[in-house]
Length: 263
Image (cartoon, rainbow, N blue to C red; front, side, top):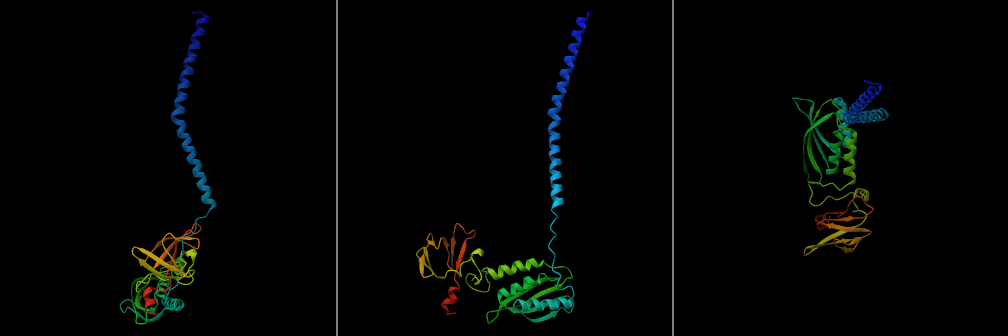
């Protein structure tokens, strides 16, 4: 074998080695690179989440109500909540067999009774039952069964939220006939304009209703003060406007039965 043959054989071996290396590199790229890139992406995401968690401390959970930790504090708190919400406590009867259980006898109008119930939910008690019935003068009279628990009640924000609903929206009274009547402090931001415009009647002509608002008659589809009347029921009108996120409701300021009775 001469020198030329030896060099040729060496070049062939080198070529074969380069081909094998190229094949191995292609397999590596195809099989491993995607896994490495995915792992790197997950690591980056994990680092970002860890940094965000360190930068933004978690919001503390709502703190439960602590009023009524002792029996004297509970009794004082009940009287205070009743006074603040125009509810009269007529009686407090402890259970002879279990003094931590008390039956309250209360009296007040529907909204006041609901406000009182929402507020005492924040006390360290459990409400096991309540029973209300309309009284002769139109108010509600009933009983509330509570038990002193010694554990935090609902957060005060719960009672505040219920206060806002009862004070600023039209809440149906199950003991009265007719649609709920909004309070004068309700407004368009809460979806009620009953005290901005005056709905005085809704009359049915065949299958069509006609509403009288501020002394003029309107039907579904008519425009009223930049709003479009989209629906009409027996005792309310619904209106929509492009700049108002909520459908506006226009209720009677008195239920028709009360108007007819002269009340």
